Amino acid sequence: MTDLSRRHLLAGVAAAGAATALTPLGMPTAGAAVPPAAAQAPGFYRYKVGAYECTSINDGARSFPLPDTFVKNVPKEEVLAAAEAAYMPKGMVTVPFNPQLINTGSKLILIDSGNGIATYEPTKGAVGRTLQNLAAAGVDPKSIDVVLMSHLHPDHTNGIRAADGSMAFPNAEIMVPAKEWEFWMSDENAAKAQSSDMMKNYFANVKKIYAGIESKVTKYDWGKEVAPGITSIATPGHTPGHTAFAVASGGSKVLIQSDVTNIPEFFLRNPDWHVAYDTDPDLAQETRHKFYDMAAAEKAMVVGFHFTFPSIGHVEKDGTKYRLVPVAWNPVI
Image 1 (cartoon, rainbow, N blue to C red):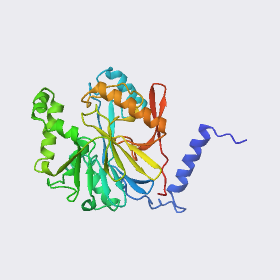
Image 2 (cartoon, rainbow, N blue to C red; image 1 turned 90 degrees about the vertical axis):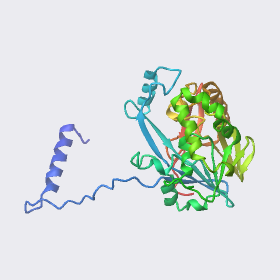
Image 3 (spheres, rainbow, N blue to C red; image 1 turned 180 degrees about the horizontal axis):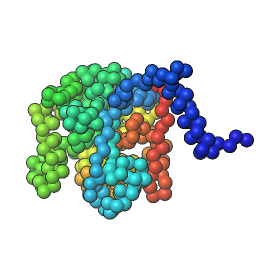
Image 4 (cartoon, helix red, strand yellow; image 1 turned 60 degrees about the vertical axis):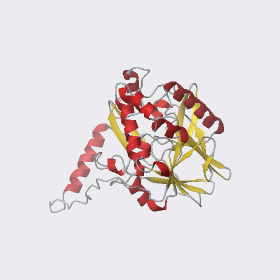
């Protein structure tokens, strides 16, 4: 039997290092290392839903210090412990962003548009990657027929604008939930929001992003086929008009849940937590259970905008909580 002690292993490493550091003439060998790339690979992942080819497009991920009120109904220490258990940087939280591209054969549909290219340089490339990852996937923004919004928070809607303020997807129809549009475009609601910096900024952002194109926006209702094979699902609470989608082709289906839950490490494991970004936390909690009970019962494939890239998995019930089972990376579409 071979006895590998720590002393033997360290001695072996030292000997190997000495053997490779010098040539027989005592001269050091030439270094074979390549310079660090200092850049990440393109972020896109293709998967099939029946005859539809779908692509998860990574817009990036943002890490930031956990705010005191990130979760409103539990102590911050409990949230920090959950973040540590999820191996996030100490005292921090990381949020990924993943729009979805659906190619039905007749239409090219982008579900949500990311943070926008204007955020790329200020965040040093952490977010705002949707356009470059679409290009890496071989998709011209001009070829996109529909940009289908789940709701109007900045990380979902700002990507419709290019860096110069023009339309990033110039030939696309912009579709927005009717209830969502009604809420954010209301001057009365905006006036009520002035006491909250976050909500005040959200209202101002919607006005800015949609300025001049209001008449070109198509409003859609819940429970309707809003594009070929794509049905809107009412999932209010995160925002008044927040919408999820069922994408179906043949006998296959995927549920695209947008922000029914935010970070799965937190809000699947703790579905009764109230995240600061929810307009109606109690309704969001109710919606979260309803949606995931349905997904678990159907054993449906689920795509989450804030799931870790490539953002696809199955949600299973775990007592009163849920857990995400990521799909295996498949090299074949």
